[in-house]
Image 1: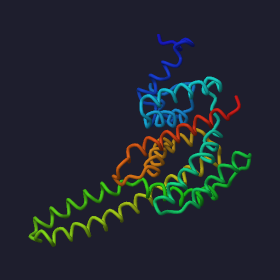
Image 2 (image 1 turned 30 degrees about the horizontal axis):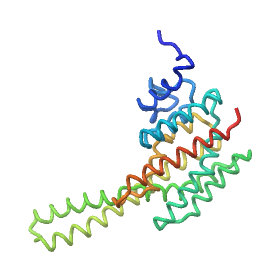
Image 3 (image 1 turned 90 degrees about the vertical axis):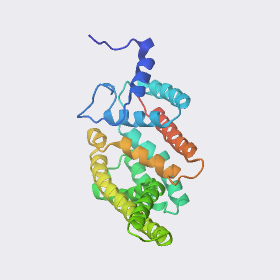
Image 4 (image 1 turned 180 degrees about the vertical axis):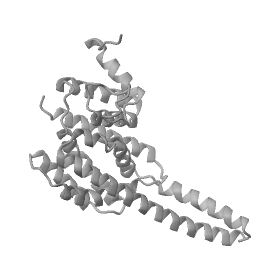
Length: 263
């Protein structure tokens, strides 16, 4: 029969759980990889942020998070999410959006709603939806793997053109035009559909203060989008370092939000 690890073994057990993979679970499918004393949404966030960092930084961060979870006795309120988004996520996404040629305003608007919720105000679902849709649209637009998708579409179009006797010059022109039009349309569709679906589900969960509903919105997947949007997915030099840095900033911010939470 399994038993709860002794206090001296608690952190190694927690670390083993993280290394096995915590992200991707919800309240209705806890699975053997999630901790029974940690809310499913928190397990998702901790798991994906652990995975996104390099090994040494991740282990140091996990020890810090483990200490805060122990202080809280595993009782992690949803207010941690609001604090994290208001202080860290919204400013990061606003910064990234401006850097990529987008707008900061939608992210500031979402951050304000998180701040109002922290202050005890019940923000109407319609207000959440109205703020989240444009902000998430920016996130998914900047997180889309445009360069890779464009290269794939271009290669396919070029092969088609050559096979149909276009000649090299015409084939190259056709491939470039097709790749830009096709990839642009796909990126817009992806951003619009993802923003719409996530905004509605998140708005309902936030307004109700429903931790189970929030877990079912798969926050770990949005964290991945946040990191990609902040780092950029354009294939430029240093992209991997920017990606790790984005995860590190998000991870440190979540640990700080846990530390700011009263037991």
